[in-house]
Length: 212
Ligand code: TMP
Image (cartoon, rainbow, N blue to C red; front, side, top):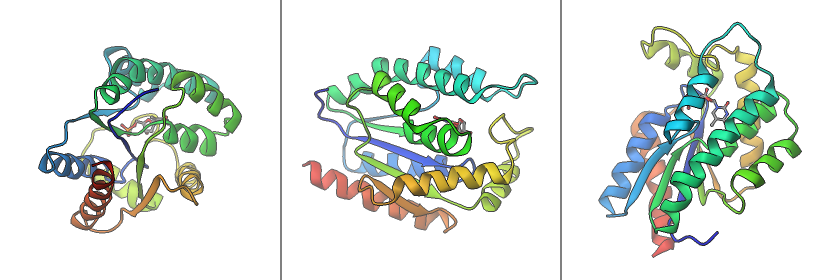
């Protein structure tokens, strides 16, 4: 895939503070005059947003890990083809709230879907595309739960309803992915918001400096 823009993803458990992190990243790119778009997964196109609704809605029926993974990649294939790849090819930066690392952590590490299945689907949905920088906001399940509960939302979605053990596996999954992987930047998200924002800006500045 030919491209000139930079692909930056934000990852972290529910309650890690990704929304605040994205806002800090947006301010940084605006300040530098970089043309960018902000998008999210699952979602980012009308079809993919519908799939998101299906995925996060609490339901009686048990959703199998494979069915969940296939839905995520169906949404991702659409999102990449319709939004991410064209933007990158046009030289724009893409700031994406979650991408395939979320599948590796949630469906792989936490739900037990084999890594080979995930990588096969990733190769089909976004051949040759991976983030240039992944900002992983790391927080313990305890802190994350407090934040989700404190956010004043009326109810938890299907993922937020999982227990602490599930989120421990998600966290371990992300940390294992980050280990020795230079595109990852692990940020302690239990730190005050301004400190987290500073780390994000530092890394984006470094990426932007390297790109010019
Ligand atoms: P969000 O809360 O970050 O908007 O994401 C919605 C939920 O989707 C979140 O609980 C994590 C989950 N998710 C996965 O399990 N696998 C994935 O690949 C993605 C993108 C999200």
